[in-house]
Image 1 (cartoon, rainbow, N blue to C red):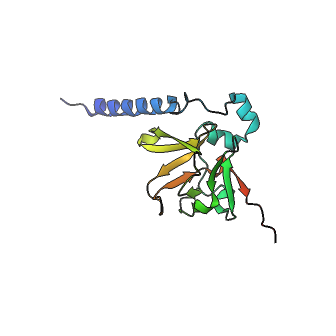
Image 2 (image 1 turned 45 degrees about the vertical axis):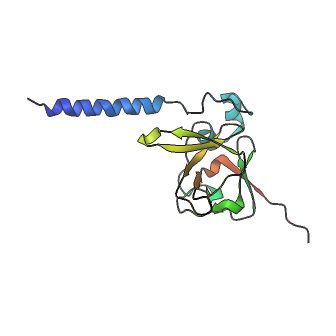
Image 3 (image 1 turned 60 degrees about the vertical axis):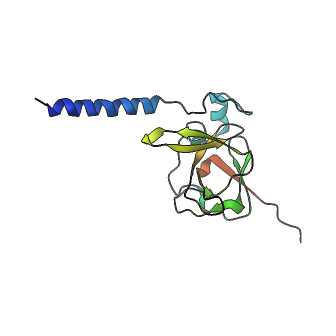
Length: 166
C-alpha cells in the first residue's frame, strides 16, 4: 500500500537537496581569470556593502532602488569595481522592470556565463575585466538587437559626457 507520508517526505527531501546544492553552488565564472583580481578583503575595502553584494556575491538590488534607473543624461555607465566602460546612455531604455536596461553593451565590455540558480536557465553578464556580476541578458528587448540587458544599477557608476563648448 502506498503511504502519502513517504511520498511527501521524499518530495521534501528532493527540494531540500536542490536548495542545498543551490546555496553551495559557486558562480560559473569563479575559476575564470580576469585582468583585475583582488582579494576578498581588497574588494570589501573598495566597494560599498551593496556594491560588494552585487558585484562579488551575485546579489541583486530591490527593483526601483538604483538612482541610475532614472539617469537620462548622455554619458557612459562603467563598472563600479574596475571602471571599465560597459554601456552607452544611447542604448539605455525604460523596460519597466525596475532595473536599468540596455539593448546593447559597448564592444568587449561583458562576459557571459550560464546561470542555473532559482531553477531556471538564464544568461548572466559580468564585467569582462574584473568579473563583477552585473545582471542578466534576455531576448525580449527592443530593436535593433532584441536584447534586454537587465543590470543592477549599484554595480555601475555613471560618467556624464563632457559638456560641449559653445
